[in-house]
Amino acid sequence: MGFLSKLFGTQSREEEDVTTEKLNIGIILGSTRQGRVSPQVGEWVKGIADKRGDAIYEIVDIADFKLPFLGTTDGSEPGIADWNGKLASLDGFVFIVAEYNHSITGALKNALDFAREAWNNKAAGIVSYGSTGGARAAEHLRGICGELLIADVRVHPTLSLFTDFENGTQFKPQNLHLDNVNAMLDQVIAWSGALKSLR
Image 1 (tube, helix red, strand yellow):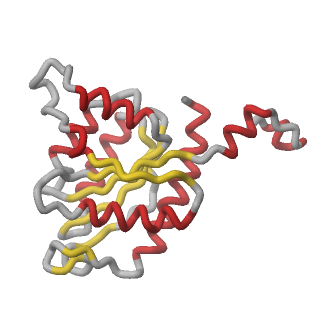
Image 2 (cartoon, rainbow, N blue to C red; image 1 turned 45 degrees about the vertical axis):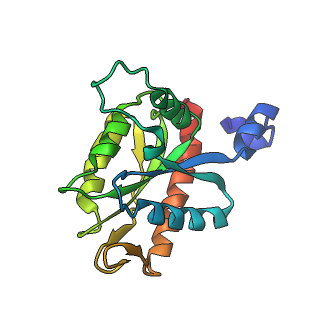
Image 3 (cartoon, rainbow, N blue to C red; image 1 turned 90 degrees about the horizontal axis):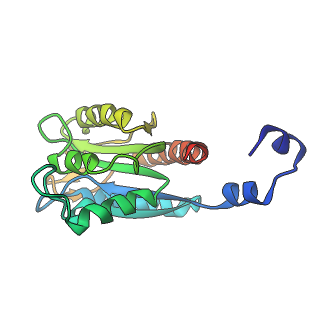
């Protein structure tokens, strides 16, 4: 909305549509391995998000797109176009990030590299898990986000394999994470809405 129209309440029909239309936020599952726990974490985040009613949230599982390793094929696989189309339809993201060897998974890095413009000028939150809450993976992801023109938000829920999972497989988050998830989503929604004007 322009400054004067906001000040004097003279909002145009187009400005009204932009400000009242709900944002589309993808909750991206960052692991594809067998026995992964990212679907449990993603569904938990979506359950919290859906109660807010402030956006349309959906799980986006990179495993569904069957992406090849970047540079190993001619790039004609339908999953590549589908992946880019899905990302283009979204206004912001929440990455569900597992820490592998102090970084993000190879599958997530590959998926990030298979798109460019579809990431640009959008916001993202990070929910990570691992032995140290996935903090090191999240910091690596922030550097990649900067290169892809994704504005990563400050609040970052971290989940411990020792206190938030039973036997490392059954996700049982502590209640204290609820406030952090909501604060992260507040920032993702605010930034996603603001960045929409740049696209």
